[in-house]
Every structure is written in C-alpha cells, then in structure tokens.
Amino acid sequence: MCGIIGYVGPKSTLDVLLGGLRRLEYRGYDSAGVSVISAGGNLETRKKAGKLDNLVSEITSHPLPESHIGIGHTRWATHGAPTDGNAHPHLGGPTSKLSLIHNGIIENFGALKAELLAAGTKFASETDSEVAAHLIAAEFEKTGDLPKAFANVVNRLHGAFTILVIHESQPDVVLAARRNAPLVIGLGDGENFLGSDVAAFVEHTDRAISVGQDEIVILRAGSVEVRTFDGAPVTPTEFKVDWDASAASKGGWSSFMAKEIADQPQAVADTLMGRLESDGSVVLQEIDGLSAEDIKNIDRIIMVACGTASYACDVAKYAIEKFSRIPVQVELSHEFRYRDPIVTERTLIVAVSQSGETMDTLMATRYAKEQGAKVLAICNTQGATLARESDAVIYTHAGPEVAVASTKALVAQITAGYLLALFLGAGRGATAQAELRRLGQELLKMPANVTHVLERLEPIRELAKKMADAKSVLFLGRNVGFPVAMEGALKLKELAYIHAEGFAAGELKHGPIALIEEGQPVFVIVPSPDDVDSLHPKVISNIQEIRARGAKVIAIAEEGDAEVGNYAEHVTYVPKCENIFSSILTVIPLQCFALELSTAKGLDVDQPRNLAKSVTVE
Ligand code: F6R
Image (cartoon, rainbow, N blue to C red; front, side, top):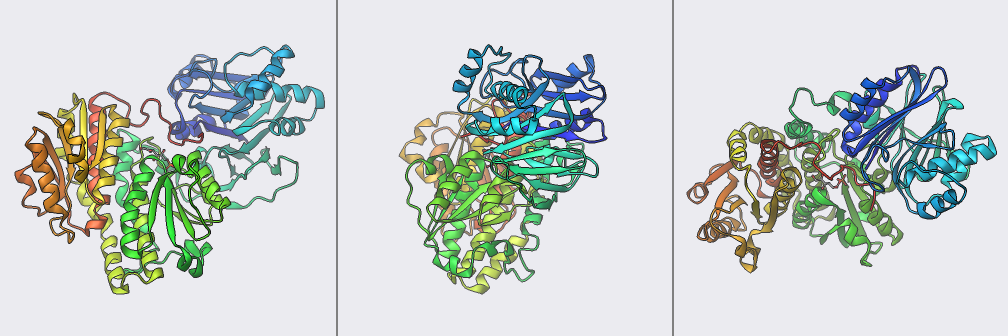
C-alpha cells in the first residue's frame, strides 16, 4: 500500500517521479504528491487528493522548477482521510525545509505526537507520517548531521515503514529507511533510484538491490551506501530485473486488466519455461534450498495466502494431494498466524503471493519459520520481502501486474502449483513416473489452450453488458472448479461492486439453495464429462436443482460436452484438457465477465474503490 519513489541524477526529476508513480499507482490512489529541490536550492512540494491525474493537473497550473533530486508518493489512506492536507509528502520543522514520504503505519505515533505537541510543534495533517517529518527535522537541528538525525528517529519508530526524506540544506542526498515495508534501490549510471518495487524505475535501469529489514540507505547520484539502523555497514547484493518497461504499460489496451488477461498465455508459458522438459518431466532447480531429504521428511504442507492467491492454493491442494499424497492444508495467512497453529520441522509452508509484500502472508511465514518449518515461496516480484525471507522461491513469470485485480498472476500461481505437485509427486514416488510425464506433457499444452479460450470470449462479453443491472450473482463449482467459483465471485465483487458468492456445488442443498429465486443468475463450472471421478453427472444434477427453482444458468464447460447446453441459458466452452488442470481455462471467462460488467457500469476496472494492490499492513 502506498507507492514511493526517490530519484537523484541528471534527468528531469519530475519526469522520473511521475513516470514511476504512474507505474506504482496500483499500490494506492487516494492522493499523490512530489517534492523536489530546485537547482537554486529550494524545496518545493505539490500534492493533491485523488488519482495521479489530479496531481498532474496541479503541477500544470503550478509548475515545479527544474530539479535533479526528489521524492514522490501515491497513497492508500490509513491515518487521516484522503485529503490534500493528508497527502504526502509531509514537511518537517518550523521552516519546512525537510520533506518526507512514508509507506506503512507508525504504531507509536500517538506518544510521539504528544511529545511534539508539548514542544509546540504545529501539525498540518492528521497522519502518523507527519510525526516522523517533525522529529527528523528537530533532531537535525540538534545534531547538524542529517543521516545521524534520520537514524536516531527511525530507531524510535514502531510498526511498519518505508520512509524517504530530502532536506533543502543537503540537495544531493535522499535518505531512506525500511522496516516491515518494501524498498528497492535502482542502480543507474550517474543516477540512482528508490522505489516500493522495481516497477518504480524499470524504465531506467534493470540493476537493483533489495533493501533488508531495518536498513538505511544514503543515496546520491554517484553512490549508494547501506547501513543497519545501528550504523553497521551492509554489503548489498545486486540482482537483475527481468521485467521490461513495456510490460508495465497499457500498450494500446483499454485497461491494464484487459491487457493482463490477454497476457495469460505468455504468463503460463513463461512460468513453465525451463521447468518442464519436452518429455514432460519437471525440473525445479529453484528448490535446491530444500534438499531431497527435506522433501522426503515433509509430513504436511500448509499453503498460506490471501484473496485470489489463496484460490491458487486451493487449486494446488487438489493437485499436490493427488500426485504426492502429502496432506495439504490451505490457510488464509491472517487467520493462520493468530490461532496457534500446529507447525513442526516437518511442515512445509508454501506461501503464495504476487507482490511478495502482503504483510499478512509475511507474518504467517515468519511465524512458521520460528516454529522450525521450511518456507517455499511462490512469488511474482523479484527482490520482494517474501522471496528474501523464504528458504526457496518458485518465481511465477507473469511480469508486472498493474491492475489491482489479479488475473495473470493467478494463472501463473496455479501453473506453479501444478509444477510443484508434479515435482513432489516424483520426489515422493507417489505417482508413476510415466504418468507424471504424461501430465507434464498435458501441462505444456496449456498456453495454447489459454489462447484458444481468449479467442472465443465475445459471447460472454455481450452477456456481461446485458447484465449490468444484476444485483447478485452466484458461482458454483466442484473440485478445482470450486476455487474458480470463489475467484469468479471475488472478481465481480471487487470490480463491479455486485454482491456475489462462490459455493461448492455440492454444498448448495445444505443451505445456499434458499437464495435461488426466479431469474437469479448462477455461473456453474462444469467438470469434464470424461472426468474419472464422475463429477459431471453430479454437477448436471445441481444445475437441474437450481433451474427447477428459477435460476438462470450460465455454464463454463468443456468442448464436446453434449449435455450441458440442454440445461443452461448460456455456455462458454473451453478446450478439453486434463480435468485437474482445467482451472487455468475456466477462470478466464469469469475474469472477462467481471471486466466487461464493470466497464458497462462505467467503473474504473484497474483501480476499484477502497482497494490497493499490495496490502502491506496487517
Ligand atoms: C484480488 C487480489 C487480491 C490479492 C491478495 C494477495 O483480485 O488481487 O485478493 O490476491 O491481496 O495479494 P498478493 O498475491 O500480492 O499477496
């Protein structure tokens, strides 16, 4: 939540800051602001409530001077309403020569504010962040040493924060500190960058450093110094960013979400690339942090994640248990951490996160590590905290996901889950090698299958446009179709603000069927008629039950399913594939439906209300 960027170097700072904020806006869009220090040595700030475009208009009416150092912020409000006054940057000291931006929550801000108020400090906002600005300014007055003053104050702050500071008296340096919130350095030639993630500066450099917990950065155009909060020097490790800037732009699409839905064949292909041999065997070199012995010793897997990523875990559970016979439990990260769960050294935690910065998931994995468990991350963002803190990482190569609602990251997470299932199946000897290779070969067909689905979405788009007035939509599925139903409902809630629920189709008659009345739209994810576990006839019966009570059935079914068309008002067919892998295909029409319905209602699909993409507070 909240996106931050800092820059020092020869380029036009405003261009760098606004370009970075545009790519970080998915992190929060309640307000935005920038501070720069002009060539003449004056600190100037512009900030505005609302989306980044409001800030751009403000700067057009009140232009900023040419500058080569600055900081920028896009906010997801926590303390204080999303107003101009509460927008970042916040100025510190009686002469307002210091500017600060903050991502996170300063938990002890109440006590610190009381201290400042007692000393006569005047506050311009209701934020926790402004407290830090005044404290650093006051400490600098006392010590005359900006890095020292900065370190003294960040050591007093509790909670989660990434803080960036510039000061008019030192126009060549940006200071940054990180505790429990993300911060990445971008290394340029005679210029350097700071960002919440690499999207902030991907247009300018592919060389990056991920800043560790409780570390301070002293950033100049020609140097980068990293220290601990205690002042000890840190030798950081550089990594190469494999996202390119064009992947973080709309590229002619009407929205990032539309583009990201279209990116899905590539996301699946790139996640499989180098991990599946042509004969279907799985190679997961990334897991070398976990020895063969570790894998043999696993007695239980607990998958932790939130929201859409948790549905990827639900799908993976079916596959991992089926192929490896290791029991899998899926837990929402925030529930897991605080219920005294049973975790031992033989538990493998699989933490799934697009951003790798979701605080609930980070806290869950830290807790599990303290209990002695090994943590395997499935993560989309290089240099993310989750990746740093895990014993091994399988990166999903979906590329930058900018739309707040997750689409391509989900299919990449599901793909990684299938790879893990096949890998564990082989490692545990629970499924015959020949069968696993056959399944691997089936998985290799999925990118083409996804393309096939994408090419046939027009009818569901038309249907969505006609349903813009729907008040409630239900989603039913069984087996891997169940998490798909949950995801279909979540997408519709968050994008179109329509009441939606996903259910296991078998659960319907245990209560939810009471919701069905004349005209109630119900999506049903229909399994393959060739499904060996014979779920198809059961789902057809579920359809009959709801139709008998007036439901309008919209089915997602496999091509060649001769029966379903007799009972549904609308059917979207997806290609035949191994039933366990079908979730990658059946979820796509539901993403598209939510996008079209939201668009038909005139809503902002990329930035739905009240949400932020990267939830970095608990
Ligand atoms: C919904 C959505 C969220 C995220 C969740 C976890 O479309 O995107 O539910 O899936 O906040 O985020 P990550 O994967 O970054 O941990």
